[in-house]
Image (cartoon, rainbow, N blue to C red; front, side, top):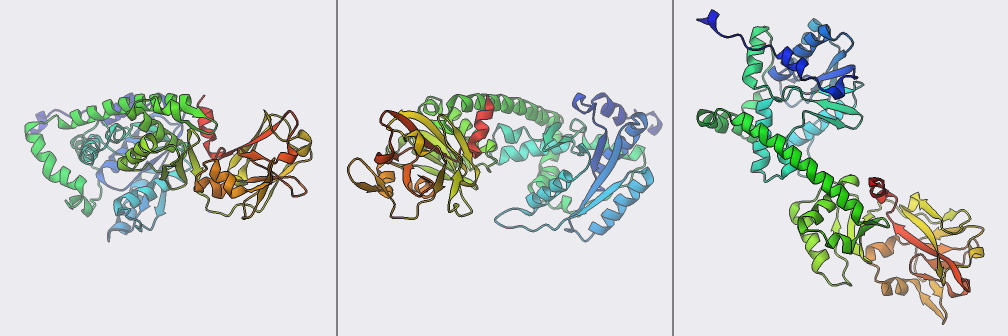
Length: 455
C-alpha cells in the first residue's frame, strides 16, 4: 500500500510558478535560517532553484540568540547544512535583553530583523508558512487587532532598502514535513515551541487540533481572512493619505477640515500622520481620548497627546505636531538677508520662518542685512505703539500653549534689537508705513514636511 500512496507535489514547482514579478530583476537572496524544519526546507528549495536560475546569488543568515542551551548546536547544524550545499552562511550573535515592558519574544524578533537589515542581499527570504499565517490571524483577533493586524504577514513587501519575501505562505506544515522526508532533510527542534505558556504554542498544540476535527479547512479560511484584511487595510491607507492631504495646511492639520470628516476617518488621518512622523502608534484609548478633547474642549484649551518624539496639540485652528526637543535651543542663529516672500527652514530650531507682505509688517530694510533668532530667556519686552510689553504677556494673550511658548524664537536685528515675535507681533518702531514683511514661525514644520510630499 505504501508504494501506491500518491506522491506529494514538488514544492519547487510551486515556488518557481509563484516567483514574484517584483523579484525578477533581483539576484541576491539571503535565507533566514534557524535550522528548524521550515527554514531548512526553504533553503533546500532555493538551493535547488539556484540550479535552474544560475544568475541568483544565494546565502543564509543565522541569528544566534543565546536563549537556549542548544543555541551553539543549532549554529553548528546550520553551518553543516550550508557547507554541504555550498551556501555562504552569516552568523549574527545578539544579546536579548528586555526593558520597559517589552516581551522577550518581541525583543528577539526586533534583533532578528535588525540582523536582516544588515544583509548585503537585496531579498531576505523567510520560511513562514500557512500554519504560521493562520496562527497570526487568530492571535491578532484574540488581541482585538484591527484590519492591519489581521492582515498578518505579507507575502512580499519592502523593508528599508530590501524586499522581505515569504514564498511558502500557501504551503502547510504537513506539506513541508512530507518534502523534508522525501529529501531526507535533517533539522533541529526548538524546545520552546512546546511551551504552551506562549499563546502561539497554545493555539498550535491545544486549540487548532480541536478545530481540525470539525473544520479541516480552517487554515485556508484564516489565510483568506488575512488577504481580505490586507485589501481593506490598503483601501483605508489610501483614504487616509487622501484625507491627510486635504486637511494639510501650513505644517499641520486644518481643524475645520479635519472636523468635517467622520470620527473614524479623523482617527485614520491622525494614525497616517503619525506613521509619516515615524512615531509608535498610541493605544486606541489614548487616541480616542485626544480626539474627544480636541472636539469637545473649550477654544482656549490646548488638548495634547504626548508621543515618543512629538506632542500633538490643538492651537490656532490647527492640529500641530511639536517636536519634543531633547537638546537645548541654540543661543542664537544668524539668518541670511531676508527678502519678500521667503521661506527658510531653520534646522536647529526644527521649524520654518516665512515672510509675507502685510500691513504693519517690518520695514524691508530692517532685514536686508540679515537677522538673528534667539530663544526667550525672560524679561524681554517688545516696543508697541504705546509703551513696551513683556514678550511672555504677548504670547499668553495670543493664546499660545506653554509647550509652544518654550520653543518659540524671537527675531532680532544683527545689532541686537528685538524686531518681532514671529506670528504674534512686530516692534512698532520697526514697522513699514504701508505694507511690510510679517514674519511667521511654523514650529516643527521641517519634520512635518512629509505631509507636503503627499501631493
